Length: 123
Image: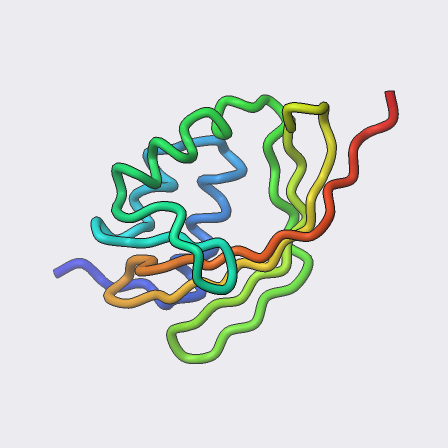
């Protein structure tokens, strides 16, 4: 019988796969019917297929990296404050975000993301 990871361990596994730009390993941390929201309740992806399609191009960015600033865990909720380095349409830079993950049975069931302002690298 496979051991079910704690919610914090699942979210850490998700972060590690994100930073490795390993889309399939990252998706393995999500439930098949997982949903992603733009905080507070704008549904942006419903199910793993939509999450994959929404994330596919991002995972090809050579500078993609999320730096964990702070993590809070309460039962099955994991809240991460991150600074993410990305390649935006207008150039490279960073964006701060808060991600709220609901985890059950060893998989992320939902993720809700609140985005701060972008900070573009100086040319």
